[in-house]
Length: 85
Image (cartoon, rainbow, N blue to C red; front, side, top):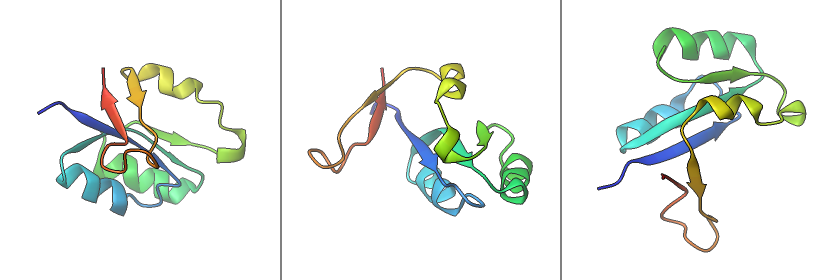
């Protein structure tokens, strides 16, 4: 089975990302504005790429540190969101 990756936006303290990880997804990056939430994420999952900042100012350059993703439209294929190339 190919590795399935995800990008978490407005990650909070990581509950959804943790559930996705348990379901077999590999979190490539988590974007969150709240410093306390980012600190929690970094403490609990140091291997996750936590990007602290305002989503309205997010340019995506921090994602260049992650492996390439092929993004699928969740409206046309709701079972697959992103698959590593």
